[in-house]
Image (tube, rainbow, N blue to C red; front, top):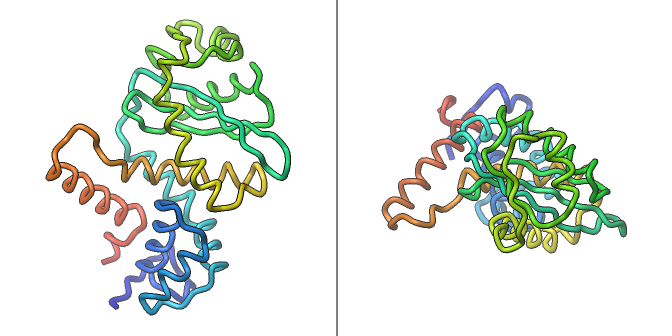
Length: 236
């Protein structure tokens, strides 16, 4: 195996290709840390699951931030939804926003499901996206309307359960990962993991309305972007 050395991976025993591949496996697929360890071992790469965890913590958020900057601007229609998750025996709420194309804009783990929590989500979205949407679509939770009147008063707000399937469906990968991880251990862990997980999913999201050749082309572009994000392309 050819080793690629990159300043961002200085003082690491394994080359950038191994580290970036392990991080990709962990955040891209429904794999536990021990599953990633075993998959690497099958290729003759002997690392512990704890090492994989440390790589995910050290590099994951930086990779996600770079992916976010590379993605196209968000659509003008935002779907917002919240789902309950159990963390250490306590009820928390995972708030998520996606655009009309299914791209996850942001997530926020909070202990409350009220107007204050909704305001926090909207303010975070505006700060990261830089502009308000044309339309905001939510379920009939009254907290959204109260928060919108304060944070985004000029935005059209549509409240109807049947209109928000896109946001509701975007929770499904989180549910599957939650089962693999045997629930999140803390709100901070959930926030850190999902902030990276959703951006990696955005990058490798499979187009739904194109032919097979276009899907393959999109996948090739995603792998090229991943190589650039992780520093492999520039160091090769």
